[in-house]
Image 1: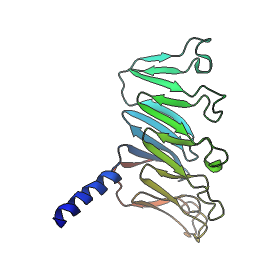
Image 2: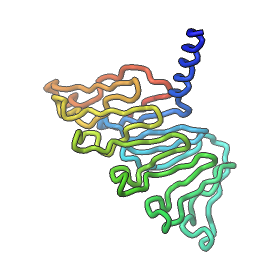
Image 3: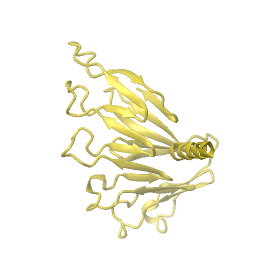
Image 4: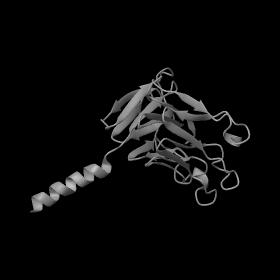
Length: 215
């Protein structure tokens, strides 16, 4: 009986920790995270390290596109993308209800996008992207304890991000990504070679649904 219970608990934990999306991390030429790409339901959402949605696209190449083309009825949405294939695209267009979201992407198909909208309770996260479907994005918001990760992305779904902080002996690592999930990042330091110092040296550890892209 105990074995059955433990087996059930194991599968429950696995189910809770399972990711229902893929995450691609783009490492830029200066060896810092340039952006994160969340892949969900054939749509790709690109957000930068500051939590701004830069753009989105469909992985399907067989699509039709429609646009908001009524300059009276469509108002603030005029000229923007309206449909990709069968997926409708909506935007937050009530500037009086919440100015922080106005004009931003609201949904595409069944995927709803929301933003941190309290400049009192969530000041350091204000206007940053909060959710893409059921994927929650959170941010570091305590500058007193450590400024290396201040306002940077802390979690995307169950992927946790950590950064090299002030405790590192070599400032060439400061603020750079230290780990994402089970994958750790190391950089050259104290090599007496300005060409190498601060550049990515190695990545270790496998993280399911995570892939790395290098410029």
